[in-house]
Image (cartoon, rainbow, N blue to C red; front, side):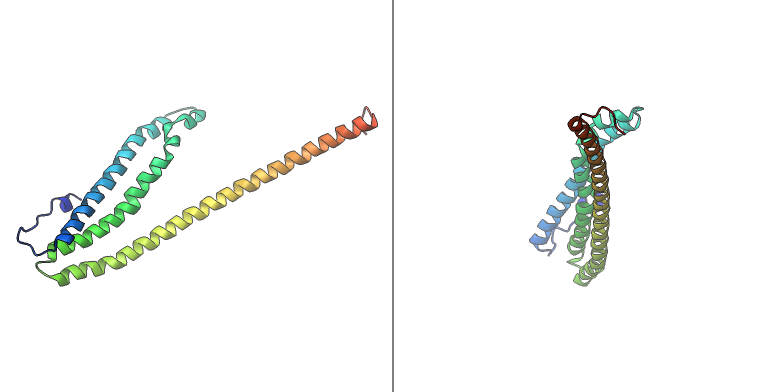
Length: 177
C-alpha cells in the first residue's frame, strides 16, 4: 500500500484524468478500509486477551467482545473481502497509470493476468462463505432438534405426572399400585 500511495507520476503524462481520479479514489478507499479494520481489531484485542486470562468461565459473557461481535465481523469483512478486492482493483488501475504512456499492451497484460486471479479469489470466497453458512445451519438445526427432544421429554414427564395426579384426585385413591 505504501508503494501505491507514494507512486511517482510524470507531470506530462497522457493518462486520462478519469483514470487518475479512479486511482486516487481506489487508493484512498483501500487505505481507509484497512485502517478501519486495524482500528477495530486493535480496540477489540485487549478485551479478548483479558477474557483469555480469566479463570472463571462465567465472566466470559460479561466481556465487551461478545457485544462487539458485529464490529469484529465488519473488520474481518473489510480487511479480507473488501480490502482484497480493492487491492486487486488497485493493481489493475496502477498498471494502467504507470504503463499508459509506455505500453498499453503491458497494461492490458497485467489486467488479463488479474482476471483469473480475481475469478479464483471470488470462487474461493463464495465456497468458503457457503461452507460457513452450511455449518452454521447444521449446528442450528442440531440445536433445534435437541431442544425439541428436551421439550418432548419434559412434556411427556409432565403429562405422566399430571395424569397420575389427576387420576388419583378423581378416584380418591391415596396410593398407586
